[in-house]
Amino acid sequence: MSPPWFLLLALMSVTLSHGARILGLFPFPARSHLMVHKALMLELARRGHEITVVSSFPESKPIPNYTDIVLNTNMGTLSGGHVPSNLFDMKTVGAVQLAVMLWYMGEALCDHILQEEKIQKLIHSKDLNFDLVFVEAFSNECFLGFAHKFNAPIIQTCTYGGANFMGDWVGSPNPYSYVPDDLLEYKDKMNFWERLHNTIVGTLKHVGRQLIHLPKQNAVMQKRFNYTDNLPPVWELEYKTSLVFLNTHYSLSYPKPLTPNYVQVGGMHVKPPKKLPQELQKYLDEAPEGVIYFSMGSNLQSSQMPESKRNVFLKVFSKLKQQVLWKWETDTLPGQPRNVKLGKWLPQSDILAHPNVRLFITHGGILSMQEAINRGVPLLGIPIFGDQSMNMRKAVSAGYGVMVEFSNVTEESLTWAIREILEVPKYRENAQRLSRIYRDQPLTPLEQAVFWTEHVIRHKGAPHMRSAALDLTWYQYFLLDVIAVLTLAVGSVLLIVFLLLRALLTRICGGKHKEIDSTIKKKRS
Image (tube, rainbow, N blue to C red; front, top):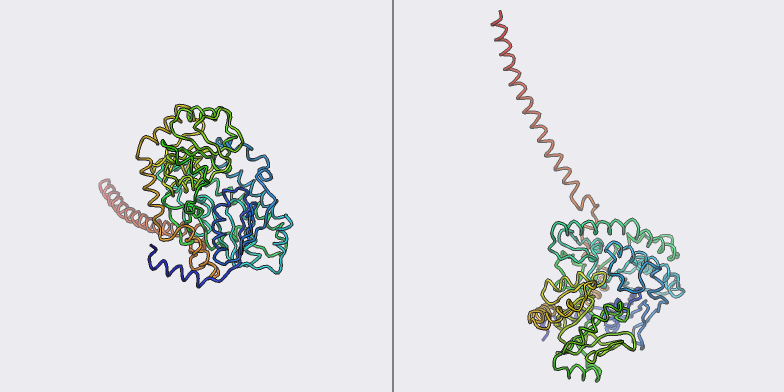
């Protein structure tokens, strides 16, 4: 039962919030990205706010208070040859190279979308007003121009755990000594070489973003937002961010310092489990040895897996006594074993809630991780790119997962990993323990996001949560001016002491020399 203070909070939230006009800008053409934002937008619409969403994936049915502006874009139009068509080839891409890829995609995304007719109408509209603007933070800073256009507060949302540079927007520190880069697979406890690598990668990404990425984003924004000559550059607009919503939770990642306007809402897309389709329900119910669920997410497609690796999975699965439910994107799977059931689309979160699901084989995407932990299911992770390796390293260190590198997937390694998780109780016990920790929150992640959204609307921004760190120059922030003055002061004192001692020694030694010279002269005379 909810505590009394929560009921009061909920009542205040309803009574104090007026129906606001909210613009949600979620341009990246990946369904998994929109899943996070859509959950919040639909809930805000349900609460009476008027929502306008810019994305590539409209709602299939009309929803009250909810308007879609549908973009004509897809991953193919944005990659520009910089991203492999088969995402399994991304395994060899390093952290800095991946960041550069995202910068190229972000530039192409902005230039492509901002010149669409419906977006230009939005830019040049004179009768539209919005009380709040949401922008997905994914290498598309050009969309911050809409906040200036409508003179509205900004909430930036991140579909993953958050890049370290995002802390700059709200004055939240991210020390390289124990906060790993989001594209590296390090833990928060790093040895010297890992800290060195983390520092080099983080610095290169930070400098590259400032000198290469942001100027390109600004050029596109200034070109397409041509309704005014007074549009600030993107690096000024991003510092006007009221809140940043991070799709993470400290139980799912590593603890790090967070300012009040850095809000963790990880898992807000996860809903209470719904009833499964009858066929799936029957399949899961009638699996006496349990079910292994296998999905590589919505962007990675199992059907594009190299044939040699696919055959490894088929051979290993055929020898298991468990049933295997495999998200497979085509109609047929050559060599499909009898205990393997395929599905082009599967209600993953609801499947994971079934008690007969013994193991989840995953790529380690953050949404899949959150759904698995919410349901208390252990993981076998095969990460490919991005934050997936870091996510799985966390699962391994927390004891609820095993990780196998894609290049190391063999019959032996895969068989061992599956048996290890199924036969050793600690993995399921740790997953269920972490599930209890994750769900032990005063508000659900979605309620948290709604509350802070309406907080920003009620107060027309969140300047009261703004860190003074944002007003400091870089040398003030790192206390270099203080260190310089203290060094100068201490150095001056030491110099004065040195000069006084030298003068004293010179006088003493000089007097002795004179006495010796006088004595020698007397003896000679």
